[in-house]
Image (cartoon, rainbow, N blue to C red; front, side, top):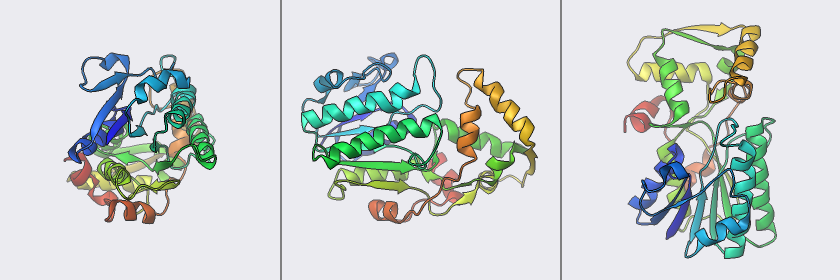
Length: 297
């Protein structure tokens, strides 16, 4: 198939593109202007400005399937989260309906349906628009909602690995106590390949999670153990200092730590992996094996 992968230079999109090419598909890489000319078989997309279907229709000629793997952790002037997560994907969905694209896959996020952060609400808006088009018989879709996606090249993965190397783990108490179910980026890419084969679900939302949920503190401790290090001391950050540090992060654009990040990390992020397991055909990687199977590969 000829597949347009939006966000093909990103962590998730890059892994998806490689898996699709290995499976014999032709990938058209949707990339930002800073990558123009550096990626073969690509089209330049401005995810902050291409908010009309007309901007997308020329890019969909002879395309069989579209995958949206674009995401930002927090908003910025260059990449406003409302445009990147909501307005641009909605324009893309409308263009796909007009162009009669048969297979559309949206990479959303676990917790998008109920989260009250800007990240969750904008992802949810794009998801719901896609569902509404499908309800009207205009499009077929699958929405994948992964928990924390772990693998080499991921910014959050690098953060967790750096935290795992410290002799002292200092994080807000709600973050340490939150339950997560990290999923290997390679398993997520497997799911995309499966969806472009006979396993394509006409309409549906699939939670993409690892084999077992775990406390955030225990997840980081497991990463440390997988790296061959002795257990670290855990020092919960008092609530007042947690709030202060997050608010300071709010004032510094580009810093990953902010109030919204703290809110997301302090929220349980887990679900059954049964449907995801059926899709990829085997048990997803367990969090205790992520370093060997997703980081060192």
